[in-house]
Image (cartoon, rainbow, N blue to C red; front, side, top):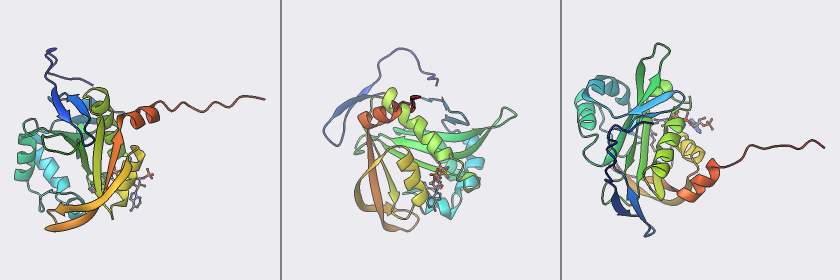
Length: 218
Ligand SMILES: CC(C)(COP(=O)(O)OP(=O)(O)OC[C@H]1O[C@@H](n2cnc3c(N)ncnc32)[C@H](O)[C@@H]1OP(=O)(O)O)[C@@H](O)C(=O)NCCC(=O)NCCS
C-alpha cells in the first residue's frame, strides 16, 4: 500500500458511529492498494470511456442505489472528477495483466461522508469478469485498510434482497445482517427492499487471526 500524501501531518477527523462510538478517521488521499490480482486506485477522467463501457449495463445499475442508466462517458467523468473531493473514498478496480498494464474491471467505494450513519461499502464489477472473486478480493483490501489504517470501528453494506451474488461477497467478508429496510433505487425510480449488514473491528480482527488447523500425529 502507498499513500502519496505522507507528510506526517495528523489530518484525522473525529466521527461518531451508529452505536455512539467515536473514531478518528483519516480521509482518503489518492491511496493505491495492491492485492494479488488487482490494483485499486483513484479513477481519473482518462479512465472514463473504459468505465462507461462496462458500467452501462442494466444488470449492474439495477442492483446499485444511484448509478445512472444509461451510463455515459460524462457520468464517468463526473464520478472520477470528484473522487477526492466529496468524502466518498472511490477506487477504480483494475486487473493486473501479464504485460504489466492494468485493465479497469469495476469500482469500489467506502462512503464516510459526514451524515452517513456508518462508513458504507459499495462495489460493482463488469459483467465479463463476474464470478472470479474480484469483488471479494477488492472488498477484503478496502475493509483491511478501513480497520487497520483509517480507525473505523464498524462498517456497513447493503444489498437488494434479490442480489445473491452480492450477499455472498458480503458473507465472505464476515458481515452480519442487522436489518431489512427499504432503499431508494435510481434505476427503478422507486424504493426496493434491501438487507443491511455490519462488520465491527473485533469480529474482523478475530477472523483475520483464525489460525491454520494443525492436526497432531497420534
Ligand atoms: C455482486 C458483484 C459485485 C459480485 O462480483 P464478483 O466479482 O462476481 O464477486 P465474487 O466472484 O467475489 O463472489 C461472487 C460470489 O457469489 C456467488 N454467486 C454468483 N451468482 C450467484 C447467484 N445468482 N446466486 C448465488 N450465488 C451467486 C459466486 O459463486 C461467488 O460465491 P463463491 O465464491 O462462494 O462461489 C457483481 O455481480 C456485480 O457487480 N453485480 C452488479 C452490481 C452489484 O450488485 N453490486 C453490489 C451492490 S450491493
